[in-house]
Length: 248
Image (tube, rainbow, N blue to C red; front, side):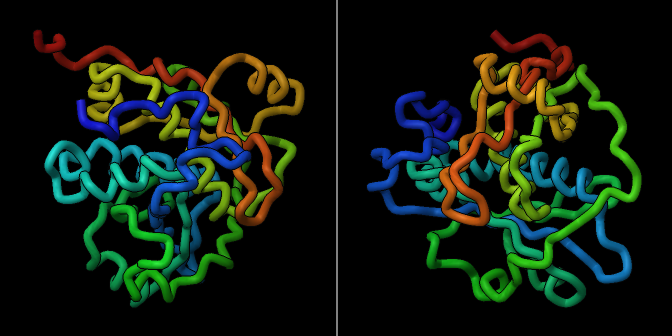
């Protein structure tokens, strides 16, 4: 098992709000870029779900494991606080972003490209010039009920976030769910194309979720919001049967 497959110890979680040992390591960030064209922006919930799947796509990619070309960057990133930043692009900006090494994940209406982690002050120029602001998205229709046969990432009803910030938080939740799984469960989820739902919990349900022992994202409060619980990952073992018997 490679080092990025090992969940961080609970006492040193990269999502804790107080100073931790991980703060002493060089800090990296996982860049994500969402395509937002003026005439046809994606739906908010689909953008959140697509961002979560993009994070899972890079974590599971062979280039991120063992001696893969992205493996060292993934290890350095996960040895420090787990930071993700979502920027927006359109037109030529998006085409330039697509020319850089990464993975594009497409949802129903959203396109999100994820890139190998970079130092906080070492963004590629074609990504550094993209805007973080302007990611306010809406759902033209009320999202359907979450599919509880697959993992559900429950967003806090108590915290208001832009779509870009919420996309990063959904990515955190997906990553916590990934850390909870065995190799066989990860294989099943990947082979099924990472089915998941992102929904906002009702207030009473949110209180239950945050005290249930499920994985919780506790945002450190570096950007946009105060330190808060933002996402609970539920049903991370609901990844379906393995397509083939596990190898022994």
